Image (cartoon, rainbow, N blue to C red; front, top):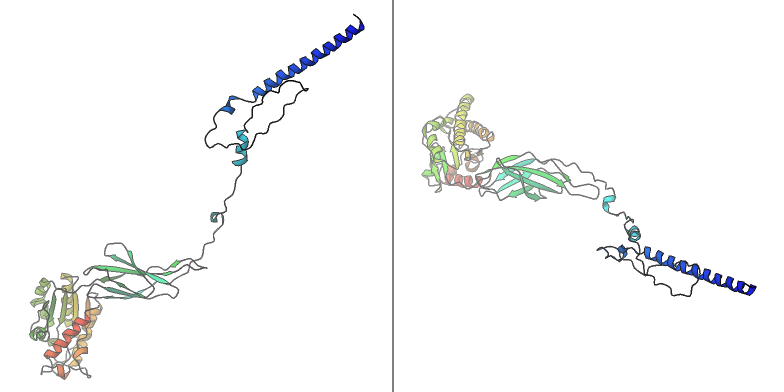
Length: 382
């Protein structure tokens, strides 16, 4: 071979080598591209999974040398799911709510416990409760329960009294009061302790009323001063000691809703010793207690013995005996004292001439009607 032939052969070998290198690189590129598209890329995306936005960024594939052949089509790759989750789920935002801010509790104020002063019970089943208050209190809560029941709030008021109109006549109720101070800028709402319970019978208009006593008491029926629902059990010349052996059983059998007792004029004849009057007082108390035992809801009115204009029944004796009678009523929740003389006496403390029947001891018709009207007015509220 000459030099020209060798030279040509060398050029041909170079061309073959160049073509071989280009073909080997093309085969390698295709093999690599098929490995980056696994089957999962073409599967359906799960619901609610993040969807990549924008065009995917592709890194150009390096080639050894430019080859005058067609560039193989490159399929787009989806953005890796893990990358999207990392950019969302890993971001934590602390909520700025009131729960994260420590709250300082406001102090409570000390309020004095109310004290029930009295309960006025009316014949129409209305009860009015009065109590002591505290200047710091904004309002008061009223609680009530029946005997054997539980306390329930029945009212709210800014006053120091409350009118209960929802009671049922003939039932006992217990009442308690609680003072409340409203919440302010510097203190929390505050409550006092509840008052001590006070028991009261809810009243109703009486269906049956009994009048028991001596000859002075008998005048109510004799002069026609009684109403249709009122009945007299009085007896002339009766002494207190004789009540339990005469008509006490009949009175209890009558089952009155209210009993008026006025007896003792005959026991006050002459100057009587205190020891004797004390004994009469005990017999009188026995009558009162017996009536209450037979009918616990019966209202018992102890009427003071009427003063006189006669030396036969001295007013000094009458007044001493009346003080004992008032003591009986004051020590019993089921009895009240009616000051009879306050309505028919004159300025000297004796029976008024206008109300005397003539003997200075017994009453006129006008006296009975006046006292009867005062009794009805007196008993409207207890």
